[in-house]
Length: 273
Image (tube, rainbow, N blue to C red; front, side, top):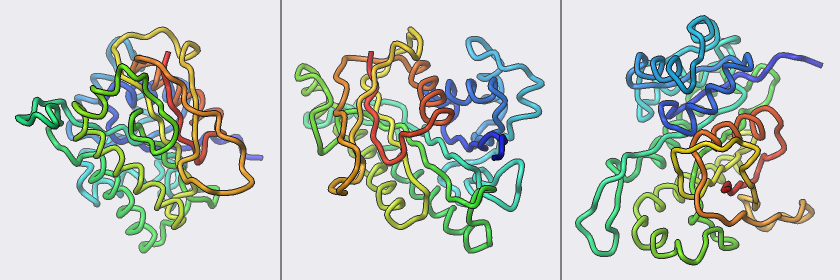
């Protein structure tokens, strides 16, 4: 059995959740690529506290691709394994998001600077995978398709309620625009798994994100299946209900539970304290 650790590709690695996951991976000797519009900004974030990744590790274990998640060519470079250029990375981590903005609308008072950034970015990644397959780069070094991990949010499920009742006005009124973007992103992943463009997906749905950190062991996780109606599978645990969770702890949970441990494939995990 091979002891080689999976290779990783990060999108949106300057964000709080994804940067924490990338930091944990690099410190545990994983090899990764990351797409960044400003590579020096990402490197500075990772080298500075609280991440404090040694420069030697950044030099040896991380390949930063300068580019934009809306560019198929930039994304293709990021998806190629840094240790085996004829193959794809083993795991894709998508943490792209937009900056919040006030919206001049009574029905949707909050928006983001790019209301379709998650859906558009996801579509670009899936298009890039198709393009690489046409060029002969179809699988990971182990002969499989990549697992696609995406950071979404609670409040977008069509299953069991996953937010407290008191958060309903915020989620279903104020946050309509960003939630529509997240929902579209998720649906694309479900379709990609059905079409075998990816081996599987893991959708991570944290509740309201905060800047604090209590430790990944304090994070409670519930889950439901992303693709419904498949018989003979494990019974859903159901969502974990809560008010907030820290970005750093979400990132560390993603690394420990999804990247390192595994077993979350096909599931949508709700995270909260």
